[in-house]
Length: 103
Image (cartoon, rainbow, N blue to C red; front, side, top):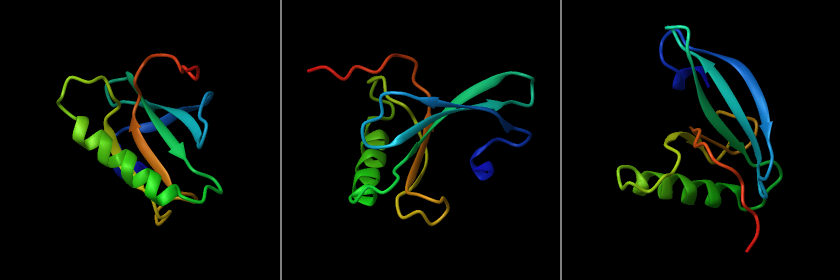
């Protein structure tokens, strides 16, 4: 995780997010060198059969939407095969809003 932070940054808080249907979601508060903070979201697929495919698709979609004006999180890193993490995971910027699960 630390390889995806700027020099001098560190994770100063972790909060479980609600509303994830297929993955565990956590907001990571990152302390910056200037004393501020920024938020990232770690999406972790635990015991999900198609995690690698889903994470590759999500990373691809986030990449395609970059710079289009569509409000989406920015892709920071993806580990669809759990080579770096305990479980397949995706790290992205935090996008403020609320979870809507209705039709």
